[in-house]
Length: 177
Ligand SMILES: NC(=O)c1ccc[n+]([C@@H]2O[C@H](COP(=O)([O-])OP(=O)(O)OC[C@H]3O[C@@H](n4cnc5c(N)ncnc54)[C@H](OP(=O)(O)O)[C@@H]3O)[C@@H](O)[C@H]2O)c1
Image (cartoon, rainbow, N blue to C red; front, side, top):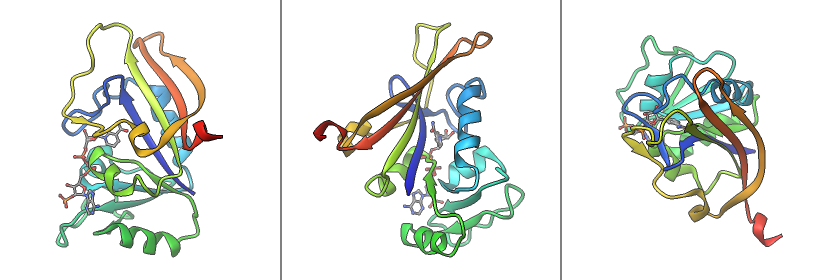
């Protein structure tokens, strides 16, 4: 199975330079990411890889077109590849069968047609009337790629940070059933 796992603000914001627009305040979402990706192959772009740091317990594949790119202290066990085809070649050689595309937004366009299920968290700051500041946005809503809402899975309201996290599952063709 090929999953996508993404978090967005209500206006589609996904990143703020090298970090998340909500920093580390969306704790339930971070927990969910760690649980969901455990024992799966996690695919990310170079910028995301450099911003998240090591994620033990899952096989990380990093995409860059830069053939001279070497991971240094980030995560020596990460596999660096240079194309989508390399990702699948490497994934087939691994015992973990599920692949999770983790972004960033620059990577989504390359893989979106292959993703079967999206685990999406929508993040809102209840303490502010303004959207999160951001530098990176989802290029198009997931509905533009054929995804529909399959389920609203749960809502987490953080009483300390006032960060509201709504967890959804999106699949293709739900509306046609
Ligand atoms: N909210 C979320 O769910 C989420 C998830 C992940 C990241 N983020 C945020 O997003 C921001 C980073 O986004 P981004 O779009 O700059 O980063 P990114 O997708 O992590 O990295 C982009 C880089 O990955 C490489 N790449 C992407 N697609 C490729 C392909 N098909 N083949 C080969 N290489 C490919 C390229 O590296 P080269 O230029 O070296 O070739 C490209 O410049 C950060 O703020 C991060 O925190 C948010």
